[in-house]
Length: 608
View 1 (tube, rainbow, N blue to C red):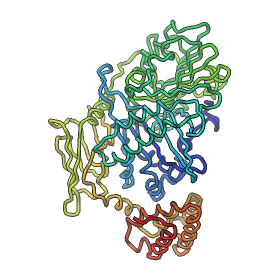
View 2 (view 1 turned 135 degrees about the vertical axis):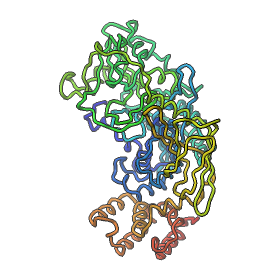
View 3 (view 1 turned 120 degrees about the horizontal axis):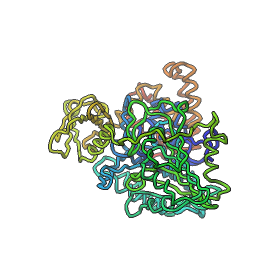
View 4 (view 1 turned 60 degrees about the vertical axis):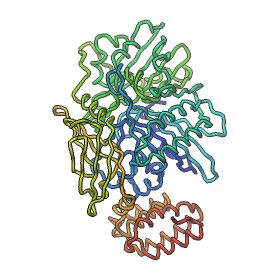
């Protein structure tokens, strides 16, 4: 079940989202703490073109345009405000992602003296087939929407409205109601997002989800969402005794581990195991984990990875590392084992303040317990070379002050994201001026802001101007740079921006499709995945697409259009997106427009 070396147990991020055979995506609502816009593009390719997230198509702007055009109006992704990673080279296609993204700012919590995190990692997906039958999938995971290679966990529940299910969807409904309240009415895409979530709230209440084989019970646990929250602190995981407990958590609070360590939780033969990151060990020094066997990942397993912060945890600016990122709790009492997995770290904030999502799955001791779980992830020989983890001693580790300059910068960015800001675009002699207003009384020291695709920047002031911008530098994405001492963090934020010209989307298309060859390539992606593959092979064999013979390409495209008109006529309607935006005959030949019009008239495709 949890063997990292087993192909059966390993999950590809794209695969878990892809529609079942014969189905296509209708709606997708995702949540994440940190968001990499390039990863979101990969997700769009997985859902729009039914390709893996690590497919080579991610580097092809034509495929990216095709995927984004196809499903950008079907996806909504909620993330922690101020945790959108700045792309290394933000291209024009990044601007189309603003349709999908909703930053969430959880109010300040006086008890923990900081801003709680919006920390759930979930997907709710609706698929349909040609007969109109619907299928649904709810995915709970520990992985953020980034390219991080750390060890994560995921569980997918499938369901429909026609069969009996063992899992109540009511907690999902409550979670969706909370998400609906987080929508920003001032952002351009509010109306569509609000409508989609309202639809899913109404629909999902009638869906029956099935629990995986071997489990007798599954409970969905949303945390931190108000009246619909699950009270995790009162769950028997934290209040009752046990025979076995395994905690896998990359980030810790000492008091939480001390609670598990309490001798009052002990029964005959009780065992406790903690798997965490080496950097967390000082937090559990001074006897807080005296009854635990504590493991960390071996240094030779850990590779360098870039990452951004994860909730209350510190920002790993220079280079993060491959390590555990899964949040798993295995608790056995007598013959009953409860498996908890999802986004909740073993930290006070995660349990009591953050917005999180967890699953509890119940099974028998004979199928899963702490020892079986450890055998899966470590192997039978705990001290062997094949075990990726090693037992550590806490004797020589000192407690540390958990605050840092980086944490202070994180909190500063959270404050910035909670400042009410708005922007207005004004045309000016063929270019555009953007005026940004922030509800602050004076300059905020150490903070600089700029549009995502422009180097023109300003200190954070009550009123700011960015003048003489090109159309493709206009969006609701902005970059904020915050500095304290010698620590600087760059993040993408969203500011409601009015006056963005309607023609901007057409300019994005023109920025990607500049030649007849690129237009043919786009049509190839629209016409189907089998054609995409052969097309790319032709492109590779010729070195570059520019060498591919147009005269032989167009008849092949017409032939494929004819076949598609019979097998999947809706695909042809998607080509309008490009033919409306591009007027140049050197890119779209007149004969193609004539042929396309014939297809549309014959098939009854409405041309808008």
